Image (tube, rainbow, N blue to C red; front, side, top):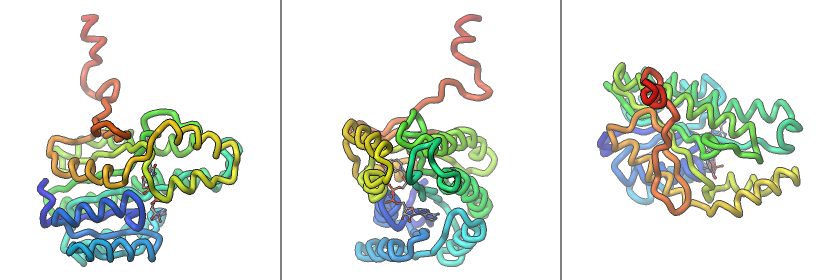
Length: 269
Ligand SMILES: NC(=O)c1ccc[n+]([C@@H]2O[C@H](COP(=O)([O-])OP(=O)(O)OC[C@H]3O[C@@H](n4cnc5c(N)ncnc54)[C@H](O)[C@@H]3O)[C@@H](O)[C@H]2O)c1
């Protein structure tokens, strides 16, 4: 899809990766709806976009509220006439002690924001994209959605869920001309990482520091560039893109694809 002249809705766009993506898309001619629960962060993103001559509007939305999710899609249609690109990016880590010591309300919140809200967002976005004859949906999973992540197993489970959801929705391209993809960043220099470092649980903090020491920080703009590439590349569908420091973004293949023969089976035949 040529992004120029299109309309994007980005959740968690009041900070970090979401803000960097709002800016890059606006620089490429996209009108951006900045959705976030944090009003001051969201408004700051809008000002940043406008400062470079881009077009953006803020809507306050808590992605764990179905009403807010419906309302942010309605706001996008009302403000810019429709929805072409959705970037479901809002996410959090689990605060406090590591699972299984974590409080149930804390790990539930991680699943709610990092996985269930992505499902709810996609469900609300698809009908709006069908009205436009198609679209692109991208979610922020994580490298922790493709490998074990010991400091926060709940976060890893939720992000694996986003990868599984993405890989399982490639049929939407044939059905509705909508491509569904996700990005899986390594460690990105955003406020989220500063929060991980401030975790009140010394064990979780030490684990996180060990991981951070082995993974150099990536700039948020690098993730935004991959999001833009996934928008542009009409062949990208149902893919999970790993983005780690110092290497080009790359598609991570699932060991098998549904409905296609297992290569090992073929070798036996
Ligand atoms: N920073 C990293 O190292 C890293 C690595 C891999 C994946 N990610 C993922 O990238 C995404 C963006 O994270 P970031 O690093 O930019 O963090 P960030 O904390 O800078 O930004 C996250 C944004 O999401 C918003 N948000 C949180 N809960 C929300 C809710 N219920 N409704 C609406 N908005 C909400 C926050 O207000 C914030 O503006 C997340 O999904 C995160 O899991 C981050």
